[in-house]
Length: 112
Length: 110
Image 1 (cartoon, rainbow over the protein chains, first blue to last red):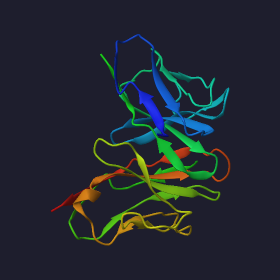
Image 2: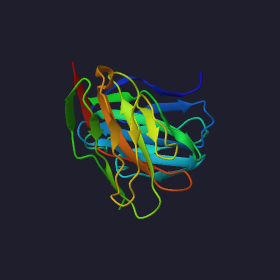
Image 3: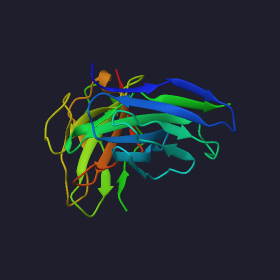
């Protein structure tokens, strides 16, 4: 069953801790993306990656980091420098210039 | 700068009424536009893509380059259409990043 898997579904973090969100896809898509979804603000792009070992900052990259060591994986680390990390995080992927983007089911991160 | 604007946060209609969810964009190049839908407790999924010019679940959307709009329309709303709708813009060519509007919540009442 092809698709994008995000884990965990819910995540709780104490202030001052880093946490890593997982995103794995078996669609053989080249490009992968991380978005943050907040009520009333839509989806905002955090980071994106076009190919392995390459990634670019999106509109709200501060306080986040990513890696792309494998084509199928694009983990996102929310660092302690992120001032307001509580949000819903969505991962997406796309095969170059074909079709729309495929989204994961999301991870809800809560800082306690 | 590229931007997508959805002016309505909430659109409330009765079943059987026509629906139009507005979307305006700003982009100097050749846009690629999408509508995504998010039903309650489900993942975001593609509804329409302007290139394909197809109708999905009775929804259509026409790209108007003169007015820089990509409004989503349906002649007769159904209760199951109640969801969050996002308009999105991708830049032409390559591994485009997708820019989203703030979203419009459509509520269809019986």
